[in-house]
Length: 305
Image 1: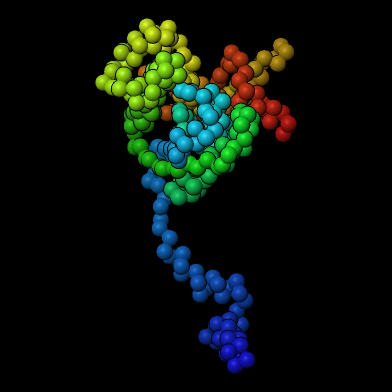
Image 2 (image 1 turned 180 degrees about the vertical axis):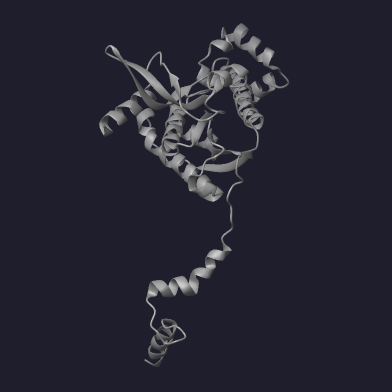
């Protein structure tokens, strides 16, 4: 009883200012406890730099095995990644380009973006969580096997001051696709079709150059590596484009996130898509066919309108 009376007296004392005027709980919290905000770090990103956020799958080798991904490439699994990337770009209009391969996706924000006041923690956490949740939601649309457990993605922010730096970053990621996919294609052909063990396949490929792996694929398996699907060899580039669609006799433009599979290392790509590095206005795109990702976006817009 005495303790409760003492506790009530203390709370009453805390709820009054030095002049004895009662404070409501909200103003008391703001005045007395708001100092803890001073411990938050100012993580605003420098102005006028390219902001790249890259998300990577955590322990995706195990995840792919558990969910029986096709080797060396699972088209549907890659399209789950692409669907998640499209969802992120639909949320952030300041993302000018997305690039995905294997279990990673990079998102390039405009130099002058003011999203979340350029706060690094906000941008990173929002993009990573948005990608992760969108991956889970997109899974049933592409994969027959249900998820055994939720995937996990980590994320990082890298800043690039110049256009050349940004191009070199994207070139590095696409070169990584080529090196890894060429090796994996040869490796899994040796394992799945020639009957080699994993260790034997590793020993067979150890010390080989790209030309050697190309020769092995052609001579032993009749595969011309350059004829494999471009998504496997080049990864997926996501660009915001104005689709030019024929609606009867009238050509209509509708904006969408377009997945393309092109060489972005050479100058031709940047000359073709000048809006990425220039004053950002989505370019036009005339699709030869509507892939599932584009169809889904157009149907969604039609439903909303």
